[in-house]
Length: 369
Image (cartoon, rainbow, N blue to C red; front, top):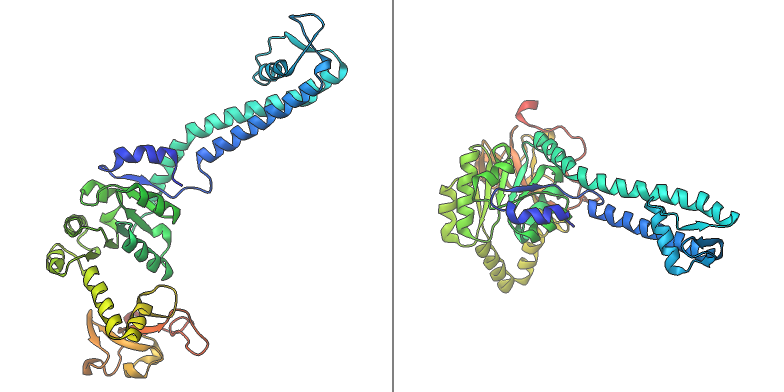
């Protein structure tokens, strides 16, 4: 759950891009509530002790008048807060012992809790400023996710499942729901409109390695792509669009890759209707964490010179000199150093299907040539 200060500030931070980091294990509000509970427990316990020994206390305002429940509450309140009017006093050794060995330690603990809570509240915002400054200093070559809806969350899950650290992901979204969801997932968030340059600057887009744009409006995707490209000419931009007719426009805006969500879903629905088994396999390929997956990996030294069809993995395509060739293309009939493979493989390694490249094998990259 986000901090109270984050919730209050986000309403005014949409335009300028408010930066919030994932919550610590416990928020300041949690600490305040915990300390208040301890204070109440201390007060109730001491009131019970005094009231149980009410015959050992006298009210100086009325000689020989024994104290009651309200007097016990009054006496404990004035004692713990060090006000001490002196009108109610212990009259026996037992009561004096309780005042010395119970009420005095309770008073000291009460004061420590009150002061500690005050200092916690005062210092939290300053600590958060230093924390964000340190985060900015260490941020670089990260991935920015614009939009944290269903597509954005799925993109993050895929990136994390393939080894990307959550600390290297920044979410940009104006929604409070997205803020809470992203914080719950341990992600840093810039709250604001991704079509505004200052918001993207706060997210470090100018230093980002990749930007994934997944808003629910094609016009917002186009504007966000234009702004990102203006800030970072070298970033790899992947953008989603709802309609196929908007793909050329998004590519002209600077996107390296464009994914058409409505067409992809429509094709999957059509395949599932014509061939339920084919639809099942396609869904399996698109589902994270189980069954089959499509992945890109480097060529191994012992695979140089072989045909793509002879490798343990099911090779779909070969990437050579930044060009993609289908596995049956004569150009890649023999694999060469520097090639990268697009393969279908089990999501998790199986005893009968080992995953090449995960057992300290030598890669056939150009630098190892």
